[in-house]
Length: 275
Image (cartoon, one colour):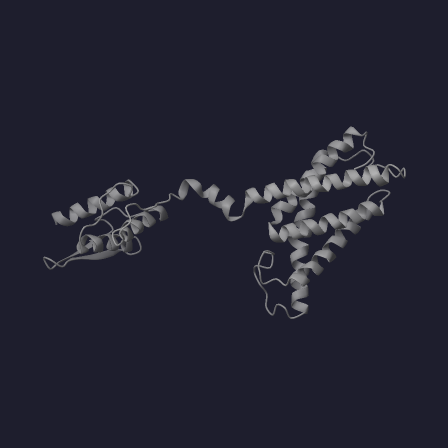
């Protein structure tokens, strides 16, 4: 048993040091022991055979420390596979401390924020051009909120609108049209994942137009609504819908929040006469 005790000690050392500088298994028995320990993480016991001395040993969970995390298991897998290759090194990754980083990479959070800020700045520029080139020359400047709009209302309003129109309404309209045109024959639990390639592009554009029209018409509820603002709201909502599909809902939300935040600063700076 001394030989197997030594092998188990070596394996535990490999796990502790993440296999950066530990010696590799030298023979078939040591290699099979490593494989056995990997399998032991999924079972209550494991059998190890020594072909040279024709000895069979049964280990239970109480005989050796188990690999407790996915990182330790993948490390042992890497070391086992390394013994079968000519590579001088093996890459091991500790996933536990980098869960947040993995989440950001998986959903492209950094890209969504970047494109959202960029789109929000473009939207704001459009509104400023509309103000200086059309509204002000025609003396159409007005305050649709009677000076009662707050920054919190502007930001939360943007978040709620995006959640309703691009997060809920857009995928539901898209799914309904697909169902009506037999493009989709069954309910898909991922209908809110608009980035799926199986969505028909023409149907999505039609759905986005319907959603954007509804969003623009919503602005008719403002005091003294202007058709120019309703129109540009429709256009911007359509663009945010496309961003939702290609980058994610967060990008559209960041864009809308950026627009409303910058718009509110101008709103209070200009004496609350327009937004």
